[in-house]
Length: 199
Image 1 (cartoon, rainbow, N blue to C red):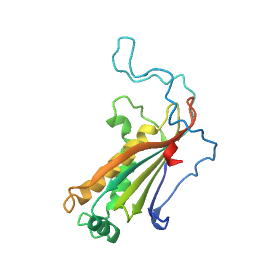
Image 2 (cartoon, rainbow, N blue to C red):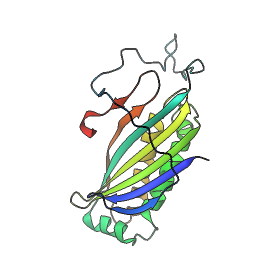
Image 3 (cartoon, rainbow, N blue to C red):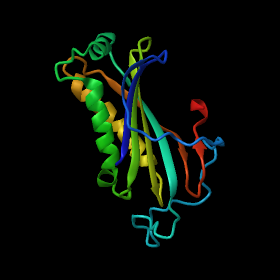
């Protein structure tokens, strides 16, 4: 069974809510590679310059994990409604959690050149920042496969952010979704990546 986990925390680290059935991530010694671009060229183009899905059949299956984040800014009143559970459409973060999980599993169906992968873990975490009137979304995705899950993690936080917007747009159409980024990835031939500013 795929393990899935969701935590909601305030900025000071206090856990507001939790849903868990997970596998702990492995400890490692990441090297910062945010400023080290890949030396090889783009792989999604064939000899004739046409787009293609990369053949990963010869690659070794390894344990791979990716972490992505996004931030959603809104009015203070909107954030209060979310925290108090008073948004008319329902529990905003619970719906965003489900949306993020579903999006990660359907990434291959949304992004043309992504491979369908056997995802073994999806965690969706939400961190509330009262000072900035924002919610930071974090997705942790894991698989044992021949290619990584960076796109799955990025898709998860993107769709979770869009879901927050959809749930709250009736009271705040100025909500902004920003800072969608890969935080770290591990596994595979390219090794470990850790974004410098998020270490």
